[in-house]
Amino acid sequence: MNSNSQPIPGKPVRGSKTGQPIMVIFDLLGRSWSMGIIWHLNNGPSTFRKLQEYCENISPTTLNKRIKELTIADLIERTVDGYTLTKQGLELFKLIHPLGKWAKQWAEDIKNQ
Amino acid sequence: MNSNSQPIPGKPVRGSKTGQPIMVIFDLLGRSWSMGIIWHLNNGPSTFRKLQEYCENISPTTLNKRIKELTIADLIERTVDGYTLTKQGLELFKLIHPLGKWAKQWAEDIKNQ
DNA sequence: CATAATGCTACATATTTTGTAGCAAAGCTA
DNA sequence: TAGCTTTGCTACAAAATATGTAGCATTATG
Image (cartoon, rainbow over all chains, first blue to last red; front, side):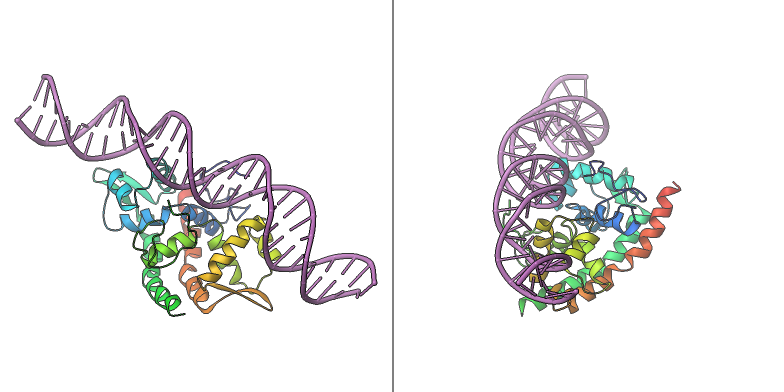
C-alpha cells in the first residue's frame, strides 16, 4: 500500500491519507519496540547493545530501523554518551509516562474480573 | 518467539518477560491500528464497517483481531449501538488524548527544521 | 418477502519482524 | 603497537503479521 516507510506529517501514513500529525505519531509509535525504546532512554543515554538487551534482545535489524525512524522524527539522537531522547522525545515521554501508573491499575482490574 | 498472541499482564510479552503492565499495554497498543481504533471510538459508538472505513480500510481480518484483543483487555466492548470504549478504554483515551495537541506542534517543529 | 447493511471467516499475497552470523571501526590493555 | 573487546551495524533466510479480495450467514429495513 505505502512502501515508503518513514511516517512524515502531511504524507499518507497508516491511519490517515492526509498525514494528520496524531496519526503519524501513532504509526511511528505503533511499530514494534518504538515505545519501549523511548521509555528506556528516559533512564539515560544508552548504547546500541544496551538498548538491544533492554528490549528483550530485539534484533539489530529492527532496532536499527527504529533508531533511524525515531532520529528522523527528532525524538532521539546520537551523542557521545550513546543514544538519548531529544527535547521533543523527552516531552513525548512525559506525555506517555502516566500510562505506567494507569497500566498497573488496569492489570489489577482485569485480573479480578 | 511467543506465538500466543493476546498480551496479558504477568505473562511474557514483547518487551517484558515478566509481563510488566506498561509493556503489556505497549504490546497491545503497538499493534497496527489499535490506537486508531481507540481514538476513533471516542467519537462515539461505531459499527464494524464504520470502523473499517475510518481506519483507512483496514482489512476485516486485522480489524477483527484487534477487536478481539481490545475486548479481552476490557478496553472496548460491543453494545447495541456498536463497538464502544469501556470505562477503562475511556480512561486510556484520556491519557493518550494530549498527544493530539503535542503531535501538531511536533509536526510544525520538524517541518521547520 | 425482497433488499441492503452488518459482522465476520477463508485464504493467498505482501510486508514486517526475528534470529543468527559476522564484519569494520574504535577503545582498551599488555 | 599488536592483540583483545566492545560497539554499531549489515546480510539474509525464516517466522510472524498484516493486507486485500471474495463471499457467506444474520439481522435490520422497506
